[in-house]
Structure formats: structure tokens, C-alpha cells
Amino acid sequence: MNADTPLQLLGGLTAAEFLRDYWQRKPLLVRQAIPDFESPLSADELAGLSLEESMESRIVLEHGKTPWEMRRGPFQEEDYQHLPEQDWTLLVQAVDQFVPEVAQLLEQFRFLPSWRIDDVMISYAAPGGGVGPHFDNYDVFLLQGHGRRRWKVGQMCSSDSPLREHADLRILADFEQSDEWVLEPGDMLYLPPRLAHYGIAEDECMTYSIGFRAPSAAEVLTHFTDFLGQFLSDEERYTDAGLQPVGDDPHQIQRDALERLQGLIQEHMSDERLLLTWFGQFMTEPRYPELVAGEEIPEEELFGALEDGALLVRNPSARLAWSEIDIGLVLFASGQSVLLPGQLKELLKLVCSADALHLENLGQWLADDDARKLLAELVKQGSLEFADE
Ligand code: SIN
Ligand code: CO
Image 1 (cartoon, rainbow, N blue to C red):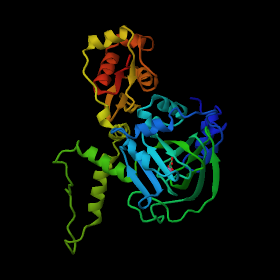
Image 2 (image 1 turned 60 degrees about the horizontal axis):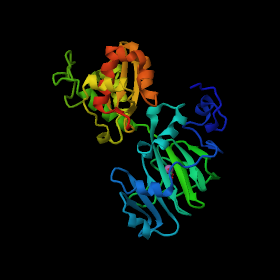
Image 3 (image 1 turned 90 degrees about the vertical axis):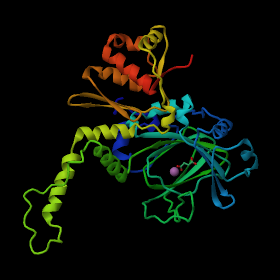
């Protein structure tokens, strides 16, 4: 994608301009980001999804049994019969993994690294509904799907920002409004992380939240060091050959001990290949790993089916990414990684981006042993699967 092409989705800004001026910095309102956008899902269909065991859903009632009561799904049909006329919201997470038309929306966000995308959450709100003033630690694009919603934005927050006492929701005690807009279907609001915001349904409405993910520093450090630890032997220890005499007090930890420790840490932390391996695996870990379960199909059967016109598609729950290193390519697939020869680069790009893999676009790859092995492995692992007829 050319970073210098003006994008309707960004109100005519180019990706380069958006990244320079807005991404992670300040909000951007785009009228008609997706002109004539019609929600691919109706409110009833969204409520239907919230009845399913595999979906993560919540209902927030401003005036429930307690103020801002939160109920967790899966819900029953009758739960919906007892809801008030107004001031409640249903939120369903990761709808993109279950509804292909919703996943399709993500194609418009390819100007950002795909491994930064978390999910598409869809909310339905009765008039007046919302989840209260809050902030998120992630970037989000709020696309209005149906009806109108008033969005108010406020101050930049941090973990020190005072919250209301609430068991489940992080509602801000203070909201210092700086702007507000009413969004109509197709309008979109980008919010950087930690910006206070508050959406209130003007009438019945649906909002699509295209949410991003970024590991916390604590996650990076704890997960990466756990990962590194697997490669270190028990014999490798703090060593102090050449130790200087203890001086006047043996209880003192001397500066040279810290330097030895720093040396040990740096030696391992600066291993770029391991850092990349860990990061790629971590960022491609599926949200629902149990949904990425493949099957071992004998090679003749697998490639026979492709020859006969079958389509291989990415499992909607799978996450894929790839990278180039000095000794070849690394493919990250749903939390696993594999080192591959450099000549598979175009195949990796195809596997990560094509709507489907088939005889035509695979072409010569089907005669390449490394390529066949990779495709068979991805099917076995569950990241690729045959499309339903
Ligand atoms: C909503 O869609 O109601 C909430 C989205 C958000 O504020 O993050
Ligand atoms: Co939010």
C-alpha cells in the first residue's frame, strides 16, 4: 500500500500524514470514512452472537442493580426481555473472527501493521446507552455502524487518574471534556491510547470498535525473560572469577557485582534473533487458541484437493506475521515460528494476505518442496483450512 495515497478512510489524509500527526497522538474525526456504510450485522444478529458460548459479551446498564451494572455473557434470550427501554449497551468482542463481512472491514486498515490489530468489538446501545467516561490503553477507531452516537473526548489519562469505585468497569471520576461530535453511520473517530472518552447513544445505535494491541512493558519483560530462560542451562550462573577482596565489610554488595549482573543480562537481552522469535510468537498468539486446531492431512490428499479446485483459507482465529533475518525468513503463525529459506518470501506474503489460496495463485509453489511442506504444516497447525464448499 502506498503511504502517500490519500485515503477516504482517513478523510483524505495519506497514511504517512495520519501516522505523522495523529497515530498515538491525537484524535481524528472523519466524516463518511466509509460512505454509505451499512452495518453488516443487525442488532438482533449481534444479540444472537451474545447467546453463544464462544463469544465474549457484556451488557452494561447505567441504572442497573448498581450504578453502571455490568453483566457478563453468554446471555439467554430472556435476558433481553427484561432490559429497560434505554441506557444500556451490549458489547461483543472479536466479532471479526466469526463474521467474515466484519473481518473484511480490517482490509481498510492495512496501512497499519496487521499484528497491531486486536479485534473488532461491536456494541449495540439503546437510546442513552454507553459505558461511562473511561480511557483505554489502546488505539481505537470507532466506526458508527447504525444510528447516531455522541462522542465526547476529554483529558489524557494515566494509571493515576482517579476512578469511581466499581468492581468491573474503570469509570473516570473526573471527565474534562474538550470536544464532542455526533457520529452518523459511516463516520469514524480515531482515539489514541489513554484519551478519556464517553459515547452516548443519541438513538438506538451500533458502533464498531477496531481495537489495537500493544504489549505493556511489564509483559514484554516478563514474557521475554521467561522465553529466554528456556534456552539457558542451569550451569550458566553469576560468576565472579577475579573477585576483588571484600574490603572493610563483607556484607556490602559492591559495584562490581552489579556490573557483572548487567553484563549477564545484556548478553542475553541483546540477542536480536531470540527477541524477534519471542515477539513474533507473542504477537501472533491467537485470542482463542482452541479455535486454531488443525488436522494432519496426507500430502497426496491435501495437494490433490488443491489440484481439484479446493480453496485454502486462513482460519479466522489465526494470526500470521513474517520477518526477514540474516539467515532467511521467519514465519510466525498463531504463536509458533518457523525458519524458512529466503526464496519463499512471495509465498509468505501470499499466505498472509490472499483471500484464499488455490491452484491459480499458488501456481509454481505447488511444485516446490519447501512450499509444499510449509502449506502442509500450516494446515496441520490449523492456521490454514479448507474453505467450506
Ligand atoms: C462502545 O462501543 O460503546 C464503547 C467503545 C469504547 O468506548 O471503547
Ligand atoms: Co473505550
